[in-house]
Image (tube, rainbow, N blue to C red; front, top):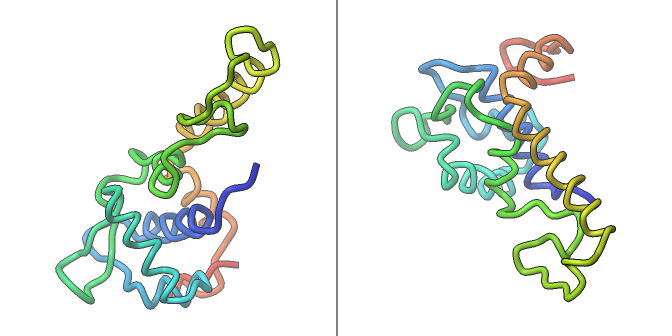
Length: 148
């Protein structure tokens, strides 16, 4: 199981925004530079985070972005769901997954429990947990927020 690049970069973007909680926002070009994500690719990530209701513009176009709610109210699973509608470690667990053995398959039950543990763990970890960890790890330059 691998998480796609949009999910991984989306999480990094959200951590950066969480570190700047408050009324001010951060410009997309600064996120792009700080996180080493191309502007074109970041456009897609920002659009999906906005559509999921996780971020918004501070005061209109070219004003920067901020979280729509406190980082301790946003789970890692919320961020994941901005990019993927379903977390399924195997095909038969997906919403479209049909298996004629699903009622009599011990292996499926195992995978289902593991899948639920992953979802529950992601839901239990808050964005604030990761932003605090990022601060503990340190910054190269606090003004530009470029992470080590």
